[in-house]
Image (cartoon, rainbow, N blue to C red; front, side, top):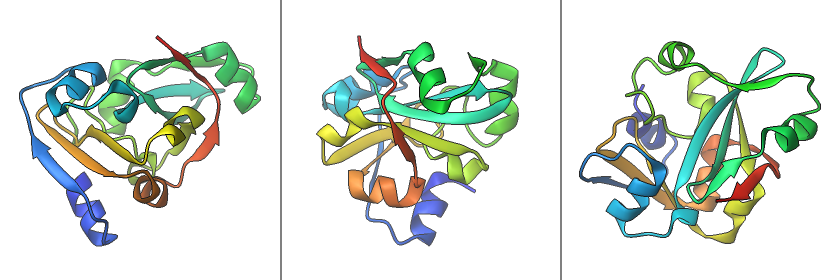
Length: 152
C-alpha cells in the first residue's frame, strides 16, 4: 500500500508534490522551501529488539540515551539497512513516510513537532513528498509522544 492510498482511504486532506531527488530531510526542506523544523524525519530504532519509528524534525537528531530512558528499555540501537529494506519493501531506502502504523510498527513523535501546524515528509520515494496538517498527521500516525530530539 502506498502512502497516497493509505491517506486517501482515511479521507485525509494532503498535498503530494514532486521535487528534485533529495536524500536527507534537510534537503527535502530546501526543495519544498520550508524550514527544517517542518519536515518530519523518520528514524527507525530497535528498542530491546522491537522496532520503533521515531518521528522528529529534520533540524533535530535523536538522543539515543534520552530515548532509551523515555522508552524504559535496556538496549537501543539504530536499525540496519537490511532491516529497513524488510520493514519497508515498497519504499526507497531512506524515503520511508513517518507513519509506522502502515508498516505494523509503533510511531513515537518528538514533542518538538508541536511547534508547527503543517508538516512535510517523504512519500516513499526520494522525489515525492506529502504536506498535511499536524493534526491530520497525528490522526493517521497515532503516535505516542516523547522528548528525545536535540536541535542540530
